[in-house]
Length: 146
Image (cartoon, rainbow, N blue to C red; front, side, top):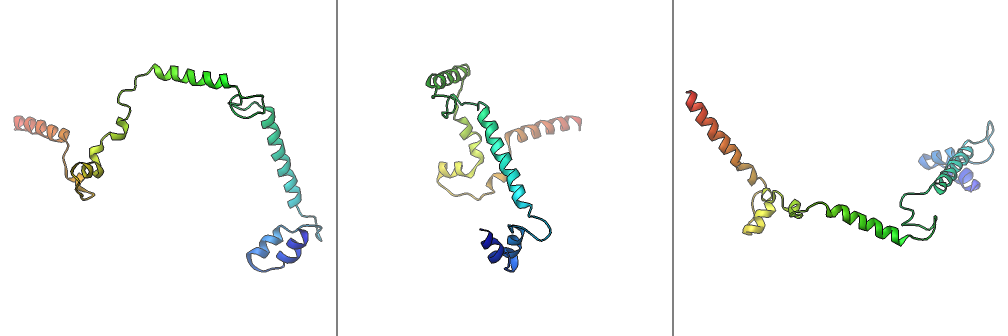
């Protein structure tokens, strides 16, 4: 590896040569390379991180993995049962309405209904019922003041 990096790659020109000169290995004239020391420190932190994770009990370790013992099937069952009990306390009326909420605002809705293509901006030309009602009330009130 040292011969490949130092002799073959580091003596090339261009980007590959600059990159290989940064990663040169072995003794240098003025001081040793710092990359190997950096790699030792990174390796130490990497292994230490694995050690910390191994000492801690990971969340849901009773359900997955075999580091803390066999899989706890009753724990999985009780978790599912408890979740279903919580969900059963709430009513879900028309739960699929989220998919069809304001569906008439999309051209796909009108294409499926009439089997006709519409221009993409055809919905910009309509007035809402609230606007019409508010405009009517405003007009009556202004006529009263007039």
